[in-house]
Length: 269
Image (cartoon, rainbow, N blue to C red; front, side):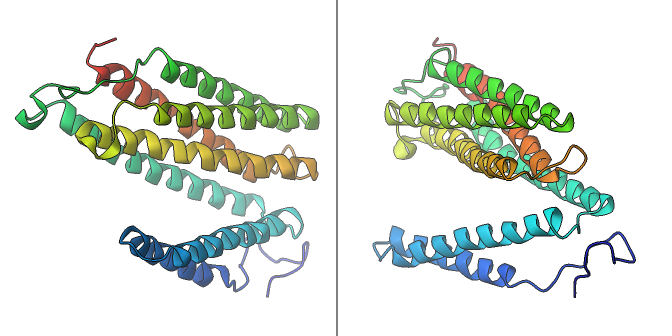
């Protein structure tokens, strides 16, 4: 059993048995199986049920973690150090995830085959002007990196108003980035299945867009917690993890912008 705050003989947190790992695994399995069925003409209900289970598991599991750290006092400095290591390893795994998509793009673009006309971008492909919407989105995302840093510094100085204002601006900018990218996708002159250019473009930028959406939700949770009085200048790993994740998203976009939008346009703009 977990011990009450102040009665622990050590600095470590022995986690109580939790149902969420097995429930989450069941939900993820149902989601995967349901998506495969749906893509092959079957019903979508299994995928919907799996999605709902996964979403509820995420909500309940993180609710428990927040309670452990904010109300039960289990997140001691030693535990927070372990959480930081875990977040750094998670971001490292995300880096390798994006390396795969960059690898696919450069493998196709550096040595284009005769099938695509031995040139990059392939013949017949009309590319985006990198200095139009992509550049606007770059400015939006880089600005959001400064606002989340402002919020972090305000938190460390005990400025609750600055924390909330900085988070609001970051969330708004994140949502604006997603809206601009959705508009760009709707007006794309090429498709995902139309060839290797569209496939590599949409996989790389699409997964980044998904990470922006996830990061925005992450920051919204931090905003709600800020209104609830959570986070202290010396105890705010939940916010710190969100800020790290957001800066990671910023850096990935810089590489996407210069490699895929600018260099990948083949100098057509």
